[in-house]
Length: 332
Image 1: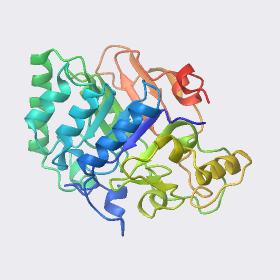
Image 2: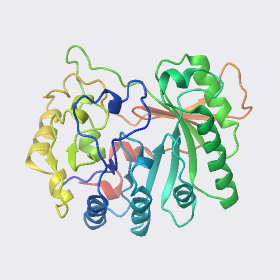
Image 3: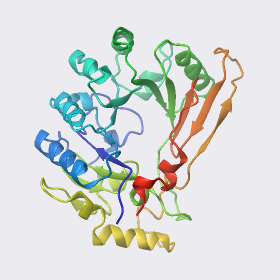
Image 4: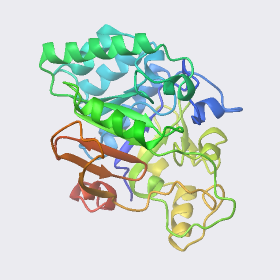
């Protein structure tokens, strides 16, 4: 019997931006909407009942979570059930009550990530994230950091840049600029996710749905991952539809997904997995990095998992057991 190491719950696929390459923007047919509070609570109750106590939740997937009017109540419910979770937002929508809750000790949120794909003084965000009001974004970040300082919050705060065509000079300056900003704990850089391989050159099984994640769309559809456009927006190889009261453990180990896992372990891959280049296959790398123009003046710790690179002044990363599946709570 398999357990996911993290549960991804898409609270909405609505978004106020039109970011380049985003699966939400390229969506040509998947319905748009918000997850109901009732469905969200049903999933959370099942996580508490059926999965290991240390299973974290990502209550975000493709949309802007602050657009769901029930998002604060969803975060409160996760905290009430003592489930750790993290939030990714573009922070162009300000909700003071929500931000203060996320940063409070009452909340079980362990990190807030703000996606911002360019330096504040360049035109990158106009090209990479159409719809962004840069002045509003800068003001909201300043406000969040001020609240974090006032509350003496222990929650991690990060900014993220997704590769959407920026040159390496801007990427390096972005990392150094934000690491020099008080209250920023780390910088994340997401790898570009665009297109499939023209021919199938799949070699290794993908660990996304095998050892790592269980992903719910806002309407309860279970999808293999939240990266491949065909899997996400076309529902290719979907392995079920959650309804309140269903067993998550049974869904995560049903006949169809078990067949997919067994076949890929034998080197047999079905589309869109056959030609997908976004495979989870290893534990990543860690070390120190130095930039050409070192504006930080301190050691910069670097780590990389499947799609993201992390830069910080603190040596902190997920343990290798998160990726390799050897922790005691995740044994089969």
